Image (cartoon, rainbow, N blue to C red; front, side, top):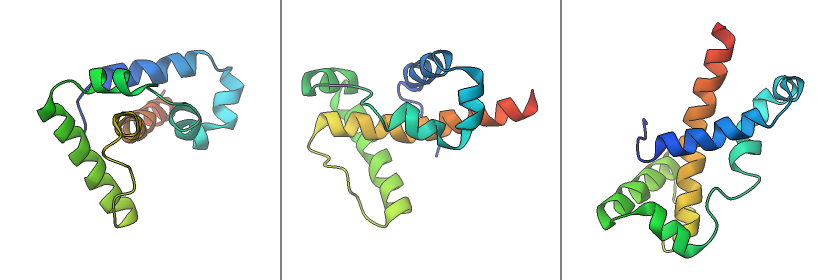
Length: 111
């Protein structure tokens, strides 16, 4: 599942996180980078900020569909409260973050 909406912004969040970590810490925690970057703190805080980040209604529906598809595939049913804009944005960032971290790790293996 390739997700594009605000992907570059989420990638910048991850890049900033990586930049703040010592190289040896990254190597020691490479299996948990996604957890530390996208699960230890919120990507967006506040309902108003989350609603602004989501943008228009059609984009919000696309983001919600991404979450539902992901959770159906991973857990067999949705878990995120899709009426809570803050939870929607943060779950979406978590999902996109998985792809970004995987790409980062693949790139590190090549170089």
